[in-house]
Image (cartoon, rainbow, N blue to C red):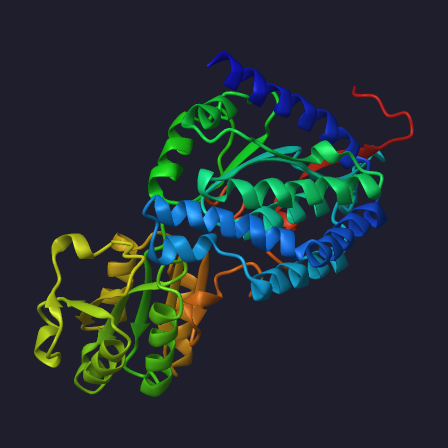
Length: 419
């Protein structure tokens, strides 16, 4: 246990020192490091895919299957997307040092806010080695140091990717310790990280509900997280039903095992008879099991009755809950009770109800006539994301470069003293 503590403590101390160097780093140097990493992903692609294949083989032997196994995999297309994301992040304006809200007080003192890095980020996550590149790239651009603790199933991939990051940092004249990987896979390493509030400024967990709860219950520093994605689609009485069908299908079927997948559909009673049989036909053809409220079963042939536990449940599978509602108030009441503040969608051609839904529904992304799958940093133009926060402080929604910074007050005086 003492070896685990010393290993994590050494990483944290190095990260704190690296964070000081990153805070002073120029935008040009950070851009250079990101672009160099994109080149290294090309140059070392075969090695990366080989390391990932080793991870996949071990994961299969351990019984990992389905969406979880899919999240672990890397291929040429995935790497191309990661490189594209790095280029987008590199091209973004550097937020560090930006001064805003300057005003002159009655005594002549000028006061404003300067944007600064968060400092040292602890990132604890599962499965996805692509998240290693996304998280570290965003952290670098925002001038932070980051300590990565990935799952044991991705250890070979993560080791190599962090090695490439450190090479890119070094070549750009930046401290390689600004991106580090915890090489230990047991839970004790996570618990040790969560104690180090002297060195780590914020923890961002990304993974299953069990991991999120472990971090939230044990961290001594602030935590930015989302526990789960229980996302609803409300089909309004004024909906374009063909559009609603496409949005529902995309939200549920494209990638059912991700946090922005659709988990429940609420249908206005005026369109239920027309919409629900079409929804069942499309979903059944895609292998989706419908679990319906008793008021929806009359419109469906193959659906199973929903249990009480199916409302508010993140299935992460080809399962979809369905309910008929009498009006928008009932829909929003259902969302308020069972939603997880992640993503909520309305399909409607009624302008006033669309605006009301945007204003009244509480989620990190609220959409009108678009798929829940857009709650993603890359899709929303952030280049990438380190995670999606549903905790509201200090970020709400996908966390990109700007969300990995904060502001401090600065003052410019001419000898003023307080009377």
